Structure formats: structure tokens, C-alpha cells
Length: 206
Image (cartoon, rainbow, N blue to C red; front, side, top):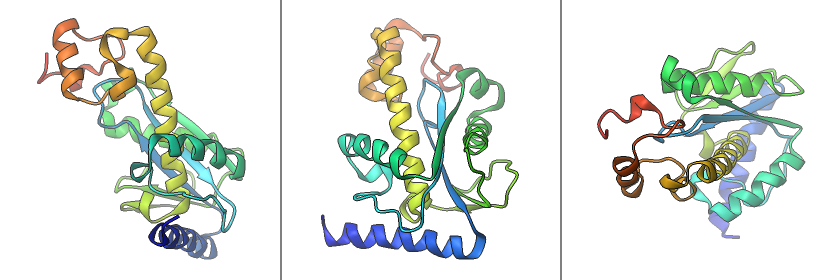
């Protein structure tokens, strides 16, 4: 493992240790799927033990799909508790994607078997939670707990889109996971929208 990666992971663990010292039991929260043209938005909440030894833990965007899948299982085994939640396409259309993302985050925290005393949320928008909550800009690169949540949310959503591809094979969801790639847009123009597409996201395409 590269020294830079090791140092970054230790910095993320140290960040969480400081937060625990200040606030008690913390959880990391992150979402996946705000940008795609199709599918539910996912969120995960994770409580890790102090100095949790998960080799290669990092921002989900910085690691390969294969590595994320291995970490997905390891995080679930080593976390104190974790939960993955969603907000549906119907909720995205009803509330807008930001509010739906925050709703999924709220559900993820509420699903934890142990409630944290403090929540760390990736980004700059706070879900409505029963405990004090703090936004951490680029938190998935700063906090081990948020990084773990980012991996759980990302892998869970990717797996969901792969399953949706079996139901709607015309769109190749297994390849692009619903994001607005050139191939996805071509297929939308050819076949039109399917039930898991987000109508409000397609206005400039269809």
C-alpha cells in the first residue's frame, strides 16, 4: 500500500478520534445517486469503533469497483452498526433530489441499532436528525466514518442498478448505473423512459 494512502487513512481515523473526544459516539453519513437520470437515491450511516482497522478505506470515488465491493463486506463486519436506506424515484419527483437525499440520510440514521450522539454528514446540507449534526465538506476524504458510509451507499446503489438492468435491459443500467452517459442518452432517445427514470431529469433529453 502506498505511503500516501496509509497516511491519508490515518488522518481520517485521527479526524474521527478527535470528533469522538469532543462529541461521544459519532456516525458518518453519505449518499449515492444524486446525479443519475434513473433509480432511487441511496444513503448510508455507519458507526465505526475507534481506530477501526480497515485497510484501503478511502473516499469511494478514489477506489476501484472491485476494491469497493471488498470493503463493502469488511465495513459491515467491523462496524459497530450500519444501515442503508433509500428514497424512491416517486419521492425524488415529489420533493426534489436534494430533499429526497436528505430523507434517505435521515432514514439511514434512524435505522441504526445504536443511535449516535453526533452525526457527520458529507457535503453542505443537513438532514433533520434528532442529534447534533455537522456538515463536513469533502467529508468522504476527511472522515473514516463518512468514507465507510460513502462505500456502503455507492456499492448498494450500484448493485440495485445492476438488478434493474435485468428488468429493463434496453438501457444498459449495469454499465452506467443510470448516469447520463452518451450511451444512456442514445438509448433514452431510442426507447423512451422506463418506470425507474426520473422524469424531472429528462426534460432536456426527451
